Length: 161
Image (tube, rainbow, N blue to C red; front, side):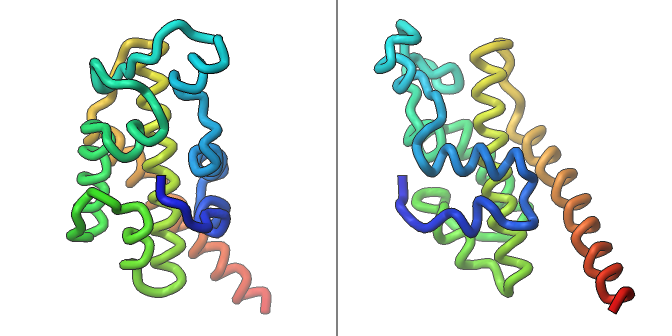
C-alpha cells in the first residue's frame, strides 16, 4: 500500500466520520482482513469472497481486486478524472483543484475505501455482493448532501459575521 500522510485526508471536515474511521484503519493496515485473522488464529481460511481463489489482504482488497477497480473506475468517471486505476490513490487527490476540490476528493477516496470494506463484509456475512454502480450511487448521494451541508454552514457563519 502506498505510504503517504493520510491524516489530513482521512480526518477532513468534508468526510463522513464512519468513512474517516475505516479509511484510517485501512491506512494503518489494521482492518481485520482474513489474512490477519488467520495469523491471529481467529479463522481457518483466507479466501477472498469478492475474488474467488484470491487471498484476502488489504493490498488485494484495495489495489488488486477487480471489484475494487470497477468501483474506482465508476467513481473516477463521475469525478471526470481520466486516470489509470493502477497506483491511483495518491494521484487522485493531486489532480483536484483548489482546497475545496481537494477536500471533496479526499472525502470521496475515504468513501470508496469505506464502501469497498462494507461490500467485503456483506460478501462475508450475508453472501451478497453489491454492484459497483450501487456503490457509486451511495457515494454520490452522501457527498451531494454533505456538500450542501458544508455550503449552508459557511453561509450561516458569514451571516453571523
